[in-house]
Length: 240
Image (tube, rainbow, N blue to C red; front, side, top):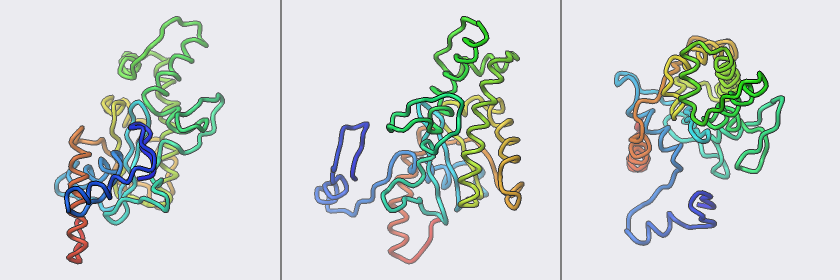
């Protein structure tokens, strides 16, 4: 592990320390990748197990994970699957916590969604200010035109980002989790339509778009999957 910003760790050899302390083999993965593995392994329809998955979680930030042939895509520097930090072409400029500007996270996280709504209300001379994505979605459900516009802007950014990743890995499933996913069809319906518009024609109608189902259990299950996968690989087997 090179860095864990939220824990204040830099160049922390966590895997080595755990292996040394326990005498057991250790594998590390971040929370979004663990959740992606958990959802692919145990989420959704129990009769269907996707081996190639794009997972995105829409919360305070935008996390993600990409699984190809049953394995997390880590990349050369462990930075693959950072869905939230894809660049976005936008009319305004927003600072991302990663140090860049106009990352997907700035617009498709719950924080970004609320900011888009509040900016639109302010531009319309409306004094309402929201702090929670759920409250904005309540206004969407009530037919509020500004809230619907904010939802549609957010969905458009998200669909473009997901379509770009889908064109690269051609997934069987696209899974959406996090707080904003609790809006259900108010989010997933428009997202399905926009994805259908933006995806490569050869994949249109050939993937499953669904909400995450495992909640906070996804990461723990994904970590267990990773451990089981290590054992399976040692035996020349494949989990998914």
